[in-house]
Image 1 (cartoon, one colour):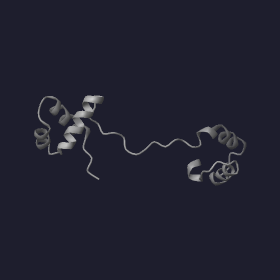
Image 2 (cartoon, rainbow, N blue to C red; image 1 turned 135 degrees about the vertical axis):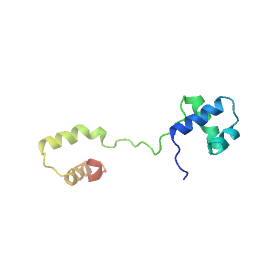
Image 3 (spheres, rainbow, N blue to C red; image 1 turned 90 degrees about the vertical axis):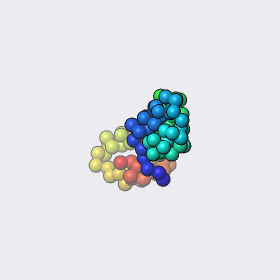
Length: 102
């Protein structure tokens, strides 16, 4: 995996390309790849920012639909351990772990 470039560098490279300089010239000037100069200038044109896209994926909160039940259960028994709560959720057919419950 390549190194991460600052948003400032991305913006300057993209602005230089959009000002009329060639991608090859700008890439050599800023010591980045031609592909990066092209991609950053395209992203600046399309979105208004040359910043990197977020990495990783956003995972859905699997226990969100069960929040009311979990909070109610903790209200009934405040000293319930995460392991015991995960086991109770398992008995209700909700596959989870004590780490997810925390």
